[in-house]
Image 1: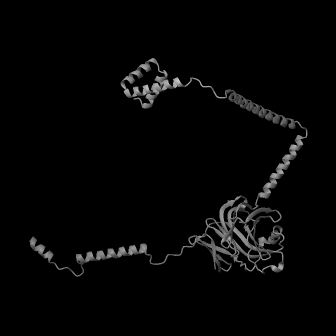
Image 2: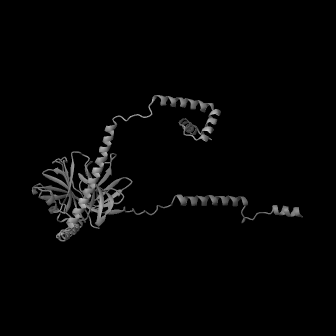
Image 3: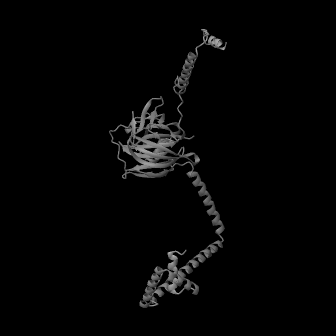
Length: 192
Length: 214
């Protein structure tokens, strides 16, 4: 009886709707491999480009205005530059005249408003011929700023200096002679 | 256990006769059992005897009178200096007390105090908000930096003397830089005008010198 039952069970035909164990294993392996591939792919190879990260603006300690000025005694010798002094520097030429005698005529050749970066060097480049490198050394009392300055003439450093700048108290740098006059560099710390 | 240095110390004390009777008996018993130590003791005893025989017990100091007189002179000078210092300090105190007795002192002191306060206020006002230069360095020894403050111009002036003039035929090109962007990785700074156009790029060359690229 038992043998009969056994034989009947073993030889019982498999319905078409049921899956053979071997095929089930095969399907399971395929599913496993496919899902693994999808998981790995989604983890390491994003299907689409990530949203662009907005560039982080570097920290600053302040802002400076720098200008290259040509000083001469003869108005006819001015270069004809159209650069105008900003509103807060309207009396600049009068102040320069009190220092750089005998020059009576001044004109701005180039100017540059520059953030003073806290962690990086900052360049004030009102012209390609005479420019300034600034390294911030942190704030000073009364709204001032400790700075390390380097005045460059093309690829030659003219002077290195440690300065404390205050808004409204500009630094006038007497540079090289040019034509009938002299090139001056003006650096002023902007009010916060 | 005794170390060799202890033995040497005992040996010296034995030779110099510094041991008590008990110590001497003990040490001499040790000598009898230690032939090496006994030989050393005999050698040192002979050396000591030889020194005592050949050298006098006391040696006279050469030029003793001169030596003593110089010491006495130095001591006298030090005493004199101390006395002078004491007199000076006493005179200074006395003079201050005599000044304090002057009748016009109160008025003078008040005027001095007012002057000092005014000076302090002026110093604070003048130093507040004034740019200053702490130090300068000119790599070219022919160039000299001169720093001064111009009260008329309300500016700090850094005058560079001895610079080579810019050739007259050279055209100085000016920029109007509105903003700049720094790239820390590339160590460059890009300069933009007010319309956002690139004016120049400042880059450092291998020598650490700035180069302007346009």
